[in-house]
Image 1 (cartoon, helix red, strand yellow):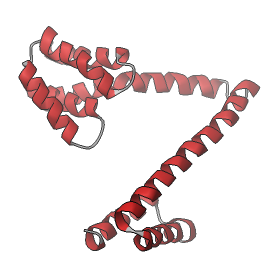
Image 2 (cartoon, one colour; image 1 turned 180 degrees about the vertical axis):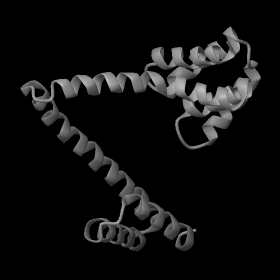
Image 3 (cartoon, rainbow, N blue to C red; image 1 turned 120 degrees about the vertical axis):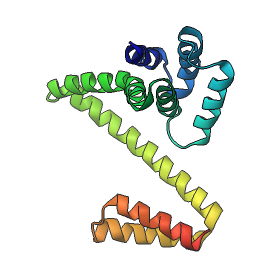
Image 4 (cartoon, one colour; image 1 turned 90 degrees about the vertical axis):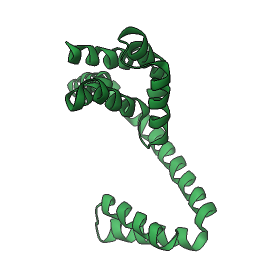
Length: 176
């Protein structure tokens, strides 16, 4: 029964918590503190502070920790799954719908409208990364990382994950 309660405690906020993890925190608190009494308000605030101090989505970190505290490793797995399940279900349904209607002129037109918006968002993100890198490390280091990354990925066909790991290593050694 505890596993079902854990599932519901994180699935329901995932469904009604429009806006992602931060908007679902009060809903999770209501379930975990108010409904089931697994944590006190003070303990929940400590879990929230811990979750905010770590990288990644806040809702899944909190779910994993609270699930573990309540029911060990199985509880942690169930809580994390329940947190991501609403998005997962919706993505599967929407992808099924898009796949079913992929040859529709309306879907093709919608896709052609979305591509430029995605390109603009990625370009804005790249510019933001560039300006942050320039401000933190200077022109020379930024240009070296850009040129080496371009050559590795485009000319030598190195997987981007390896380029990212290499850039992190470069930063740790030369920019620390």
